[in-house]
Length: 261
Ligand SMILES: NC(=O)c1ccc[n+]([C@@H]2O[C@H](COP(=O)([O-])OP(=O)(O)OC[C@H]3O[C@@H](n4cnc5c(N)ncnc54)[C@H](O)[C@@H]3O)[C@@H](O)[C@H]2O)c1
Image (cartoon, rainbow, N blue to C red; front, top):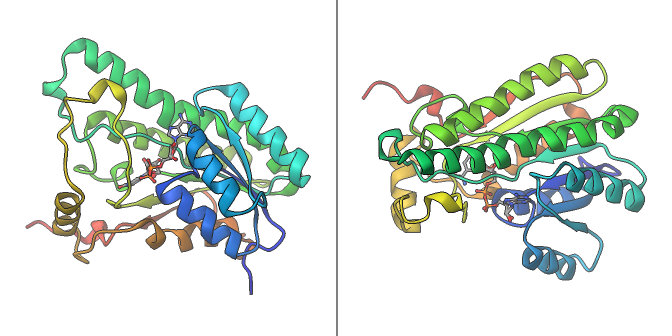
């Protein structure tokens, strides 16, 4: 059985990392996709890899009109929209509040809230009218840091708490027509970037250091790769989840049962 047969999906930040793994799996599950990403290079790679069968749109989630255009392109190409995956995001490299000079704090706040929070709002607002026509759903990429400390610095953590608020209130407002959920990955090996204002301030860590650090902090003692999370997105996007709204699937190696030691 293909879980997403005949479903049309718009994903932001689908060019790399967790988003690209979602694209690969959603295609295998029978979905039509439009990938909205800021990276022209990654979109060209997707055009080649899928021989034009996956549509692409280059834009910036911070712009409402880019989100509106991405929705319009999806409708023009596939005729409808069943699911929005709002996934694009940046990171703060665990920078601590006391280490910020005030002007860097100002810039970082603006950059991270614009991409992680405003980007999610814009995508949701632009997609909602089309999702209402199909009784569709939205899935937001949140984070272990939406629930627990030590998944990022204060600003990243606050952005991911904010998106949790968006999920819960919008699930209430959009019911009974549109379902709204999230997936919260734990530390995952990707090239997730820190915002430009923190280049030089955020500590550079190698992939090996990152793996060891993630493994040491969850009970399953695992570092995650993007493919570990995609089944959660497939479930929430599918009709199998028709009773699920306002929920977040935690996919994090067991942070809930981390214990006191
Ligand atoms: N990697 C982790 O450890 C981790 C853990 C929890 C949650 N997340 C969340 O998962 C999501 C994906 O992260 P990832 O690790 O796969 O990152 P990634 O950097 O590998 O992929 C992010 C994609 O988003 C795109 N993007 C960035 N800014 C954009 C913008 N302004 N407009 C449009 N596209 C933009 C990038 O070009 C890239 O293709 C993010 O929301 C992140 O916060 C990641």
